[in-house]
Image (cartoon, rainbow, N blue to C red; front, top):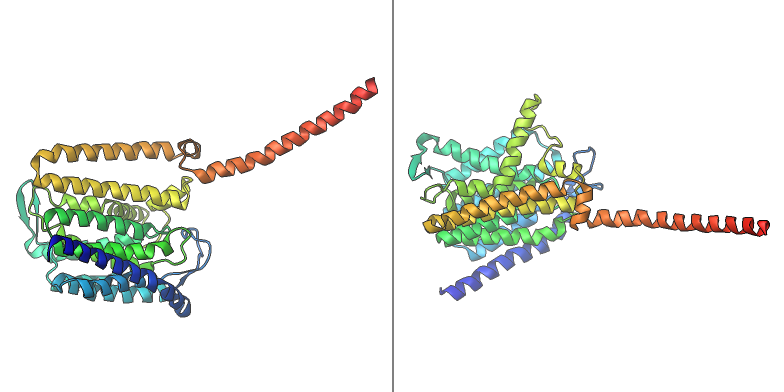
Length: 390
């Protein structure tokens, strides 16, 4: 097909995934209540205040699967996503209902990752400063670690309304641009469909969320992104190609690594839930759910932009310094924004904390009214005193 036809075909595929995901989510929400897959806030770690259904990821899975079956050419990569993804979706539904043990979930995740390896999804080498490093017998363990690790990384940042789904959509967009630059049209279409599936679910998941995607969606998204990254990013034979996936997934990977280290230092299991993730810390600093999510969206987007510019520089060496400039500017902007927005008072002045401004105004109005009433009382009290003197 010609370029215009291919573009139209791809747009239809993305829209199809979004519409199916959007249309399937309400019945999924009803199903969640019927089977008891509902998250009831029982501790301080949970950020919502009312019972909320959890298996919304099923809508994402259905939208993605139907659209890829219809619009994509069958490949080992897709069979790996469909098979392993189905295993993780079933695992997620059971966990959202029964709360399975962490070790059992890890075992099933390893099995799903093993399915991907059986279909040929393997990180067999990386390129560092022009030198190709072959993993040999360690290729399969490294691939299993990457797939399971990224699946859990997406799951761990699923702590605020719309955060994991939005970050997954942003990382998918970053991967989409990278694979388009490298000319991998097969991975590009699959990734674009994943963006559409996330976009169809996001209206239900943004704050205040009417449904969570739960482990059902988080594990599936992490698993799918991991496979796409292995096929579309780690296969790049360039100077520092391994930096591209690590840059795109910097936010969830960093949060997961810090969480594991933090728990081990406290003598806890790496699977022990806590309230120390980045999104929790932002909320504890005074950010609202929406503000924290937007800030983390920005971080994820900037890291994706760095990966995209670096990919472009890999094929145009003269642009390497431009990618470095963007990376440095991105870090400076993030630091400045963090310093400016860490205090509620500075957030009011920045205009990014309308809720605080409105609250301040609301508190000020009664104060003004009380001051006015007090002045009237003083005036009334003074008038009789003056009359008496006369």
